[in-house]
Image (cartoon, rainbow, N blue to C red):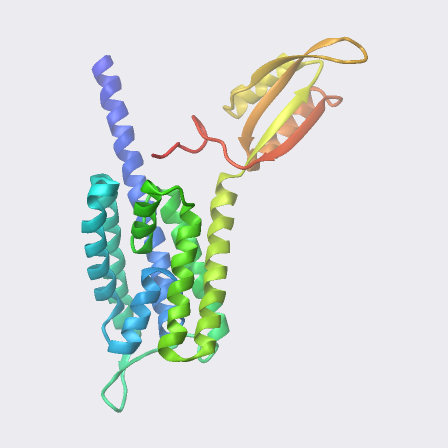
Length: 305
């Protein structure tokens, strides 16, 4: 029996690992579509290694997938000892997949002009602002999916994570600082204010959508319930929703009446069911619900290293 349980646990862990990798690939695909089809053809330079790849492409004609793969390869080798082999392997896989997707997508939107030079097809015509919005949203969504699965797209993430390991500097601030420098550098190279402004706008959209998706997926609620039927409410929530219930012991200041107080943590989408159960059992119950920024542990998010 112990061997069967151990085997079952191994199978579950493998399935969860495969699910994470599938989620990372999906996120990378969305991110790459946003970059290759909406940002690159319109010369929209964002932060990170994708921004550097765009600059090199328009200055030297080198395809972004080659720049992305080569620069990431060097960064991974330099940071391998600092960040550990697991981080290095995951980032290397992500780098290879991103470069592969970039190559395929760019080949589909590339045409040869009358002068014999490559031209990138602008999918939505001359609507640069729309390309900026769509590309920024897709980049933010893709990155959010990758980060929620514990993955990384490499690039400036490697530099920031390596510095963060030895210096007490916020990872978010480091990434923002690096991105600001890259976009500002585009003005010095192209002498075009529009490129810089649109780049900052795209970065703003991408970062805000990234936060929106991650915070929305992790949003949980906390219930504090005072009822004359605490055992029934706790039992129904425990059985029907498979949520744990913590019993606290309180006392009314005025009445001096001792009562059980139920503390429940749940996902936000489960709040309607909880309210419905409480109403069915005790319509006069006193209920307080508040948003919780993050809950980690069984049934919620996993604490990642």
